[in-house]
Length: 382
Image 1 (cartoon, rainbow, N blue to C red):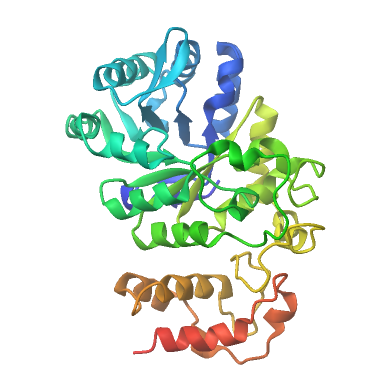
Image 2 (cartoon, one colour):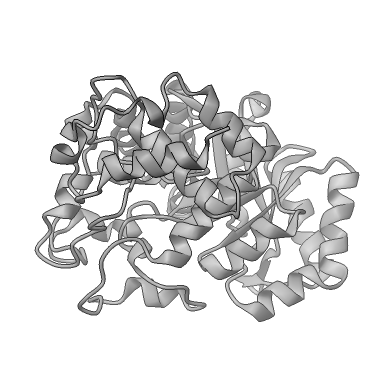
C-alpha cells in the first residue's frame, strides 16, 4: 500500500480508503470481516457519514483495540431522527448525533470532522454563517476533532471551501463520468440515464477545482469513484464502455490534490479488488485509451489528464508532473513560489526537452506536449 499526504492536515493516508456506507446492509460479523481485510492490506482511512445506529455500533466493535491504526472521517450534521437519516445544522441535534458517533465508535475523537453535505449556496450559508460552524470550531478546540473537512458533490461549493481557509480536506465525488458535467446542486443530475451529446473532457469548473485544492494544499478524499457502479457496465456507462475498479481508482489518483479513494465494499473480496491497484500493471491501470476511444463522449482531446501514457521520455522528464505544475502555475499571473519549488525539485525539467515528440505519439488525447514544455520552461524561468 502506498500512502499520500492529505493536504495541510499532514495525515499520511492510504491511497485506497474504506467508504463504509455499504456496511449499513451488513451485520457486525460481516462488517468486521471487511474491516479486518482492509487493515491487513494496509488501508488506514475510514469514512463514516452514516447516522444509522447499528452500523456505527458494528464499526465501533470492529475497531475495538485498534483505533489508533485508523484515521476516521466523521460527519457533523448527519443525524438519526424518527428512524431515518436527517441532515441538519441545528446544533443541539448535531451534538446529539456527534456524541453518539463517538460513543458507538468507542473513541473520544475523530480525525476529520466533516461539515456534512454542502451542495447548495443555502447549505453553505447555513453551515458557515452561524452557530453550526462555531460548534465545529469548538469541537476542534476541545480536541474532539483534529481537522475540519467538508463533503460536497458540487465543485462550486468545493471551490468555496478550498478558498475559505478553515477547511483542510474535502470529500468530493470524483470519477470520469461525473467530471464531464458542469456544477450542479442536485446530485441526481449525475445519475441520469444518458448524458447529453457533445460532452467531452473534464468540465472546466472541476478541472479548476482540483488545481485550486492543490494550490491551497487542501487534500481530497474521493467518494463515488465508481459512479455507483455504472462505470462497470458498458450499457449504463455514459462512455458506452466499461471500466474496471483499478482503472477508476487510477483516474481518481491522477487528479491533483487527491490523497485517498474511499471505495465502497460489501465483502473482503471487494477490498481485494480495489487494493489490486497497488500491484496493477500500467496496462491494467490504463483508463486513458479506453476513454479516448469510447464510442460516445470521447474524453479530453487536447487536454492533459496526467495519465502517464507519455512515458518513457528519452531524457527522463516526468511529463505528467511537469504538465501538472504548468497548469497550477498558469492559474496565476506568475508562478506561485510553492509550485515553483515543487517544480524545481523534479529531477528533470521542461527546458531539457529535446522536442522529439515521441510522447505525443503515445498520448491518447492528442496533447501538444512539446509546445507545453516550451511554455513551462518560460513559466518557471529565473
